[in-house]
Amino acid sequence: MIGRDSEGEAPDRTPSDHADVCVVGAGVAGGLVAHSLATAGHDVVILDAGPRFERSKVMARLEKALRPEHDRTDVWEMGGERDQYTKSLPDGITANLNLQRVKGIGGTTLHWSGGALRLHEKDFNMQSRYGLAADWPIDYADLRPYYASAERELGVAGGDDNPFISREQDAPMPAHPNSPSDRLFQEACEELGIRTHSFPLAINSEVRDGRSQCVGFSTCTPVCPSGAKYSGDVHVRQAESAGARVIDRAPAQSIEHDDDGTSVVAVEYATPSGEVHRQTAQQFVIACGGIETPRLLLLSESDEYPNGLANRSGTVGKYLFSDSSVSVTARIDETANKTPIGYTTMCSDEFYDHDDPTPGTIQLRFDNVDPQSPVETALTGGHSSREQIYKEPIYGGSWGDALLDETQHATDNRTIRITAGLETIPHADSTVTLDRSKTDNHGNPVPHIEFDIGPHVVETGERAIEIMKEIMDTIGAEITSISDPESQRLANHHNGTTRMGSDPSESVVNASLQTHDLSNLWISSSSVFPTSGATAPTLTIAALSLKAADHIDNKLSS
Image 1: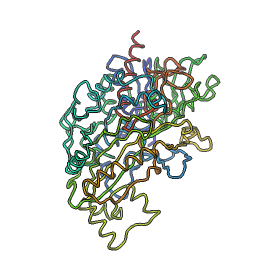
Image 2: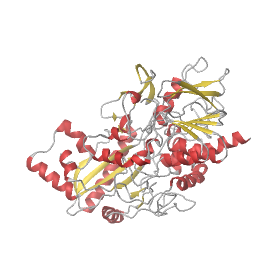
Image 3: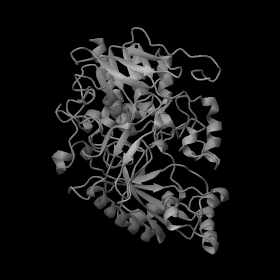
Image 4: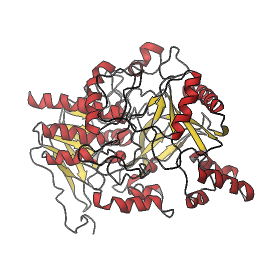
């Protein structure tokens, strides 16, 4: 029955009285903010558009992930009328938001791969160093203590062997061990003078914080059945233990402000039973990611804010960007990794910091290509990479002896691959706007995505391919595929649509994550990133969330 939980009881989704803080979004950002503030003694309520995903049913989700009759959207209930969107993309650029966003308690970290990397110092001042993009209103030193706190909170396994990052202490857990293919890459890189180091992961390498160490299911994306991989629901549960209240399946419809437009008074949200409620609070935090955060602000237009709430700058929804990458795949004459691993364990920041504006930052990630089962191999036509699978409808698949050869190589796992993360420069014409010709299941305009990568990514990708080919040649591997730098996708990380800055005419939030226009509205999301280098943003999201929580706590306590 609509509006009832798995036990048949109708949960209480009425608003909380006298809340100090209302957090919209229960992913890693919302969970950390809520936990920090609840632990500090504040009355916190969390609203999330999606459901609770019970830990007791994780094996059923894993089975969905493994069975060929299900696709990835089935695992975490993504897509459908609720998650509709439209897009306008140039040739070579792809996007499928419903393979990426998870709406529910825990958010997108429920199916992330666990990479927990810091930005570098240069990532915070791209404009002043290179004349590119925009500077952050903070620098690495400002975020450094919050990075350390975020690593402790998430539980990061990583070594102290990265010579390119300034650290104040070791990661909380030792790094995961290198794989057999890592050792091949390491030997080749040493010969070429390329330094390698461990890849930090929010996956337990030992028992910690009541969670198992990794037991090697190799299904991190999309399901970690052991709980070794961190996900945002960890801190949501901890927030509840500290007194916070969570209201699930309560999508925010709009945000209301006071008469003079200087502060927020309530968030309006819907429930499965069709009711609409108003949650009041003293402080409000939007933690809905790079797509839904600007959409909610744009839906909250008023006479005071005709272009969307907190949008006097006109930048809400602009500067959308994502992580870009290229890869080189090859075969070797020996078995690479005999057993599944599921995540990267070694990388190189040798080409991260650069002197000239272009080519930009390159982070080399030495992929642990898992051996494929015969069933998976047959279903994918013998392909060992997503790129090959995507190209088959256009270029055709292998048949006969060629398919047999592909299958043999995939199952005995002679495949190795390097992926290079590439620096992306945000552009104002990559946007999230409202498509008023199409609505979601609550009658609201859906997000419309316009996105392009620009020449910087292409030039950086071409240089990365040269480096990766040289490494493969040094190993003596036979290169089987090289990705096209111009063929990118709006990937898992959606950044930049409510960016932070010192100038209220060019940004949405300040250095404290507080909106310039409204004194009690804060945004905790990758949407505040002006840039993001060539790394995954999750650890930086976590660090910024802890920083925002400190500022909100100070305001509530003053």
